[in-house]
Length: 189
Image (tube, rainbow, N blue to C red; front, side):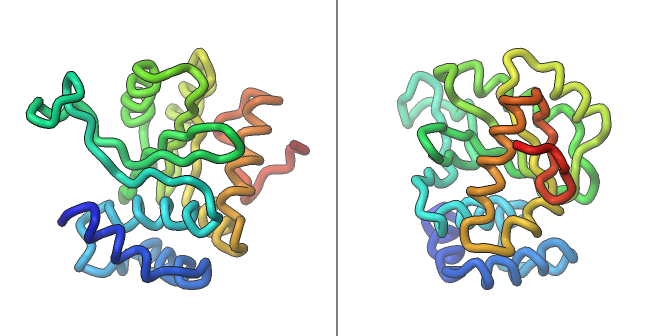
């Protein structure tokens, strides 16, 4: 299914309340079968940012040498610009916790771009303990981890996902905690 079609479809979820209901269906394993696997979660995240009024770049492909006729070298889930920071979004809607492999892959994507960019891996479930530990030792520290419970909290308010990302970024800057959980954390950012 074309990205433009999916963008139109997610645009019908034009309030945080509608996104919250959609997320509950995805979270419980009752995703509409009309959405390709994994893409409903990816588009839900981007739509939550779009509803905050921030600049969102929807999923796109990067061809080798920047020529459309060349092979595709990257598929980017999305970009979000918030408060002057560009975040490269990676979304993983898996039945289990995400291991370090997608984080390492995202790190390679970030290394190809100007240094101010920050990566965010959204996992509908969570992350393995090994993935959390290894992410804390990345240098430079440019990847934030976002779990499903945090998305549930963020979708409680209209600007929740933006507020949550701001808090994650502040905590990472202050305490070097890429895996700070906004739903359960106690750190004063």
